[in-house]
Length: 555
Image 1 (cartoon, rainbow, N blue to C red):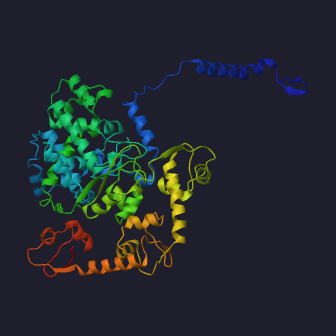
Image 2: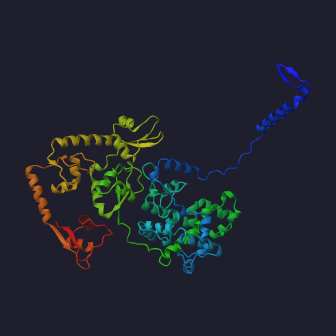
Image 3: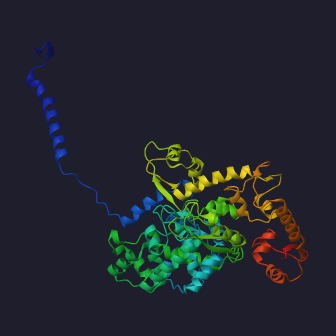
């Protein structure tokens, strides 16, 4: 073939080189056509309850990972997991399964089969988890059942927190529901629960129980049927109402059978379809714990609680210290608080054992209990650091991190922190000057074994007076530390010591007799049961026996 020279390069004749060029042009045309052709878009179902989802993101984004406990997988197991243990039921378990559940459930074969699957799951594969739930529930079951009884609801509704969270007050779902009763933020607020930067009352076992009872009462009044009320609690009243209207069904089980007739958007989710059978299975197990080999519920295990109101801006960490407990223990009783300060704009509920209620009341009534009544909610900006914020507002870094429950030195733009306001900063400044003045006129040196409480008792002054006089914010002391004890002149010191000796002479070491209890002993000596428990370091679970010695301070 003859070659042709073009621009100094060898090539073949033009006629033979057209094919590759034509192919190139064709490919470019196809690409251009594809780019101009209308694109197909996937059909995306619009999000349900968009406002609630946004609120959830806003609230949950401010939680630290340490505060969140994800729902245990056994709360909402897959259908395959539930079906696995169906064939493993023993004759005794079958007998329990066929027993009455307590709310007059009347199930046909299809429904009974679903109940059987959950019954087998919780008594076999998830048995350890269910045992843990039972133990956890002992702290709250007596209160829940009492509230149900007072409001005329079936006692079986006390099983609902098992189905929702395993009786876990700290639990959060992926959808943003929280607490023992798994309220969404919008629904929680609607029924009186506060959900914001300061606190999340969905995690308050006592207040959330009251709100859940209100909600369930509304649902039962709306549908006139407990099956539908329970389904609506899970899916929402709007979802159930629409499904009933579109199918013409009148009860939950009929609706569940006809669910496939609904459009995809209006169908009940798998979780809702299985919600009532799961609830019935849990109810049957709970009523037959002994027959099924579970430990019985200890109805005396719950700590006797006192429910108090604290004013806005109360220092909760100092309150915990005044009650002789660490912050972690205080949070265990009060999981709804998200800061170490109560919301400055309103009273808040605090739940504490009755044994420390007197100490808590004394602290709450003291003038120094509200150092954070004024505050600034500050949004962190790019380039901020704890040190920079500290310099800007005149608050020590240690205090800033403590008030906001932070241990890390890292902060991110967009987060919020609480800055003690004018009253708070004045409180810190006055504490500093008080400590400086107290050291100048100190009249007592701390010795080995001393505590603020023992010193206050020795000199017959209150613990709060001693702390305020020395500008102390905690109860920690160091050997050799100098303290100022008010009115510790020579004559008054002698008087205080003589009064302390007189008080000691009035101590009675009472020997417990057969038939005695703390209430009877307290009544005999005219003192409070809580005082007896404090003097003898007893709790509500303590047992006294004939021959034991009980300290009683008789005045």
